[in-house]
Image (cartoon, rainbow, N blue to C red; front, side):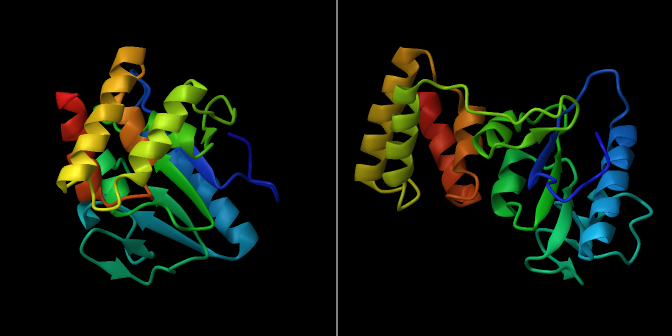
Length: 200
């Protein structure tokens, strides 16, 4: 990916690539993120489920995890999210000025990337949702009906109805749906929705 400039995108999706060392891709992303943070004079913040998920040489640099925070800004920062599961990304969604999100092989984050119009790290293309307008409308209805995290009876009923329609349309993709809901609902609620999708 090119060196950062003034129009650098907010979200950068670094997908898993079979056959390429994930550590090398992480180093490349960190180099660009550090240059961007320096240029904008804002923090570089590492984000991981635990401190051990950050690079060994992260040291005393700012970071945040599910249970702790060290010197990390609440807003102006360039974040690097190190290999989050969808559940972790939902618990700690990107909220910095810019965020690089590194994907692990077993966790498909492409749905989150598409619905947030992230830039693909390798192709430099802005990603877009690949759903039909009707499916996107159903996503919106499911989102609206999830005000109680799809835990109450009406929420479950309405979600199952719309999830069933998505399945009939051939557009029920739990990873994509979960990615859409990141930043809209809690990780607990998204887990509940994905379980409902398996039943639809």
